[in-house]
Amino acid sequence: MKSPLFIPIKLMMFALYLFILPTSVIAQEQPNIVFFLVDDLGWADTASNGSKIYQTPNIDALAAEGMSFNRAYAAHPLCIGSRFALMTGKYPARIKKSKQYGVMPPKEKTMAESFKENGYATFFAGKWHLGKQGAYPQNQGFDVNVGGHDKGAPAHYFYPYGDNDNDKKVPGLDLVDKEGDYLTDSLTDKANAFIRKNKDKPFFLYLSHYAVHVPIESKEVDKKQAQQRIDKHEFSGPAYKALGPAKQKMHQDNATYAGMVKSIDDSLGNIVKQLEALNLSDNTIIVFTSDNGGESTKTTAYGGKATSNLPLKAGKCWLYEGGIRVPLVVKWPGNIAANSVSNHAVTGPDHFPTLLNLASIPEQESVHLDGQSYADTLLSKGQAARSPMFWHFKTQGHLARVCGTPSGTVINDGTHKLINWYDSGNIELYNVNQDIGETINITKTKPQIAKELMEKLKAWQNDMGIAVNSDN
Image (cartoon, rainbow, N blue to C red):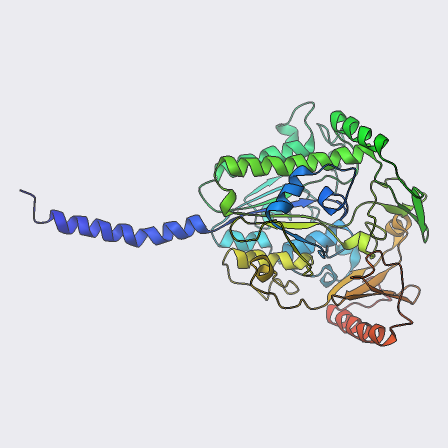
């Protein structure tokens, strides 16, 4: 005969199981985050955005399975300011002097720190470029840092990456990689190892590739295949076009660069395959984007023009669309409609609050001051119009000589974009929804719009503490 205590004990155990179950289910439902950031990838550098030369089947597949944004922007036309905005949810103009863009103050709370506080395992691999020793990813909320330091590029993409140049060696990888290894592949392998290790708990993975930034180096097989496509393609018009003291590349005819784009696409494909193999795909949000426009527009004294951003004007360093408009795709199966396209405007600081929203973590308005969540757009819930977006770029010294771009401040209200080139006093106004190539300056035909935008621009400058006649 069973003990009279047997049934009550079973009931107690069952009740305890029910009590524990919801926490377990919640933990499993908390989505993983993969933030896939490419360096210098132009808006027109993917086949899904119109490239006839670059092969990007995995990026295109991501677009087919998620939501693509036609009007996505980096927060700055150069990598450092853009990366600061991604990490903090703030405009880089809040760091007062442009020469300080390379330093993210330790007091800044990063997206990684917010996820770590909420039980996420956090991982960084690749390009950091936001601070010196003591201010690396592991000091800013990441449990693991693979290859992130203060430098913006490796000396080479093939092992040993540094070639006796200690300043540009990729830290850590010189101890584990071997002859013939390619940096993009190595960072991908390290990211997949992290996914395997943390498959049973929520993770925030920030894969910040050095590619497709210079030096332009690809695997030989990828270069040869790209050259075959280029040789068969008929380009029209001039190869370069003058833009002030600079020249803008008009053709996507660099086979080595095309090979680098393929390596990035392969990396994304390998990450997706790893998620699928571990049955993590349905519960993982993937964000794919770039830190600024493609490298296409430099002065004649400098080479390195890697790609064409057409139909956009100019490229990296410039405040025209080619310098700041970037590809953006977000995928979350079952939550974000597949093969969907949005015209909602998004800029760099917006990713921080958006990902908090998607992970059901409360927003932190006092932290991501300038970010505005686009989660409702992703979840098809209807989205309020985004307030105006702003950019500020003070060029000086070597940077001015390389880029050829003047200093300026920009406002985009969702339809019109006003550029105040304050070194010269010139003002340009474009309807970027109708004139994506910024070919027709409508300042004189739309003076009231120009006046209103200039007033808003000056108010923003005052809020940011920007004095246009200083080093800010």
